[in-house]
Image 1 (spheres, one colour):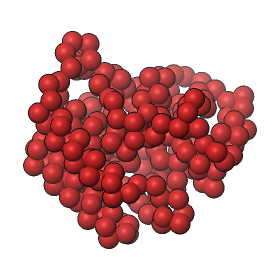
Image 2 (spheres, rainbow, N blue to C red):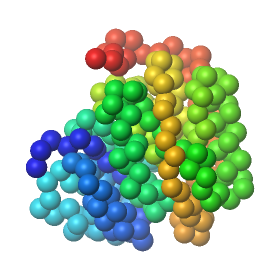
Image 3 (cartoon, rainbow, N blue to C red):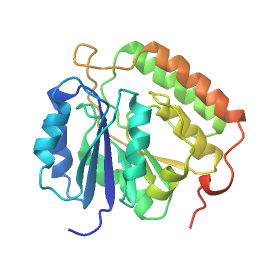
Image 4 (cartoon, rainbow, N blue to C red):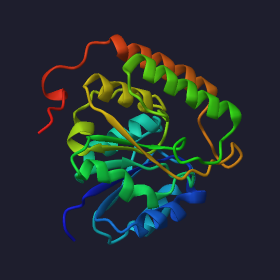
Length: 241
């Protein structure tokens, strides 16, 4: 197998109900890819399912966190291990469709940008709970006001980066704050976020949706913090080749 074009980075916490199904959908995408599942110390069979499916497979790795730390910490661990030219974040539930990968990575392959977000708004999808939908719209408005990002869906899961860029960022947030943190930093560094429409099928709280209103408040505070915080110097800043 040749070196992977794409690293699919999947943070997972107690996702045994959907883990096998989402991995089957990721595997079915016709791209040379590495799949990294970072298990955030799940108490169910998430890790065991991944171990079974990855056994003997090249470029397929299960990474176990030593303790439960949150999505952001899991993503930092995965980003450090990524080897693909491009890194895409994939939730372990079934809300997002991996068949969107080719369209999402194409602007980076074409040299158009270093960052692509998959927009649920442009995709004209079914909306989640009203409060989640409105919260996402508010975060996007705040992002555009603070950073002139010109995007429609800041809190989308599908965030895609050239690997050298995502590995160079000074990411610190352990939980869902990863999303506003990474958005703020790429905007502050002058990277244009290109959006592509994606398919989206929201799940309910009963089905395992984990994000809460407190995470929205935290996201706003992170966006405000990075608007005025000094950017890291030197090697932590990605210099486009």
